[in-house]
Length: 117
Length: 115
Image (cartoon, rainbow over all chains, first blue to last red; front, side, top):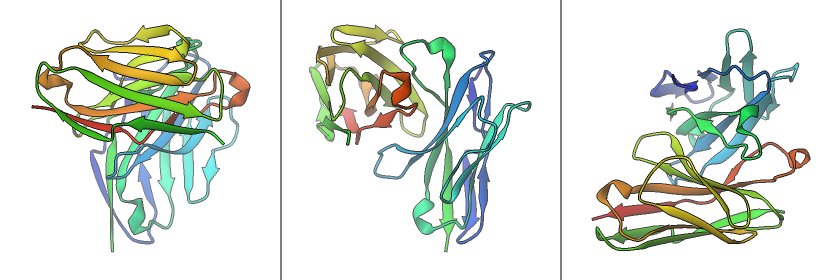
């Protein structure tokens, strides 16, 4: 079974509008972390935001916020006031406590976001 | 501050030729190090990780190998490349101490085309 599911292969949003990118996850670990990365066409992976499973409040970083719904196992990324430079591929990722000292991430398949002028 | 570099950025190699991608991290000690591969239009697949010098764990059986000869150096190699080895390779690091943060940071990536 997929551990991280991103059901939107592509999304379009008008400049200055808000957009939500969906991410659902599957784990039986009580302790885990959820991450979002941005990958522009240059290829580099840019860390955006992190949410721990025990965090009481939704994470926010500037125009990025994470809508964490633990019971639904969803961790959607909300980008407010979209800018043309936000056009990129966005990946959701999870680290489970069972990964031990390796602490590696498992990634979803990504969502290609295009911001329209 | 910590930085990560990997090279070469782009390479085109014939089938059957060797491969060496190198990654170094600065500004930290004893980091966890990772090699991920991204096929065109796909997500990232973990290939190898290392929690210390000489300690390499492989996640998937494949034509590639990894080595960590120094604390902050991670090398991805192949003796004979296959067409299926083409892709985008990303090196990444994370502080091994749980108190040092939870985030994995990536290098600039290396585009490999096997022809």
